Amino acid sequence: LKALVDELEDFLKKNSIRTYHVEGLRALKWALVDTYTVIIHLFLPEVREYYDLESYWGDAEIYVMEG
Image 1 (cartoon, rainbow, N blue to C red):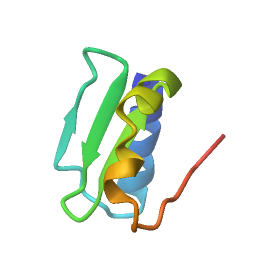
Image 2: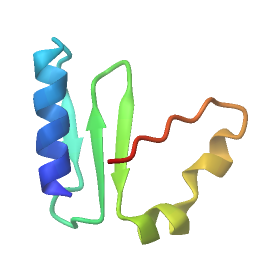
Image 3: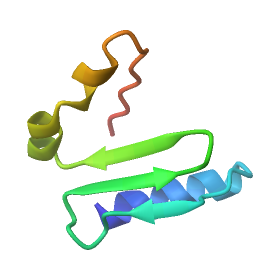
């Protein structure tokens, strides 16, 4: 998960998007990256299923990025 956060931060920096806060790296199950305008959650699959955040935002558009 740390490698994904690092890659995301590099991508954001290259696109002139500032990272204001990163949280959750100690647990290595769920990381949150706050860019002020967008909050990005990175989960391990079992944690994502457990918390089911998508159910809280049922009418929002969901973007799933794989790879």
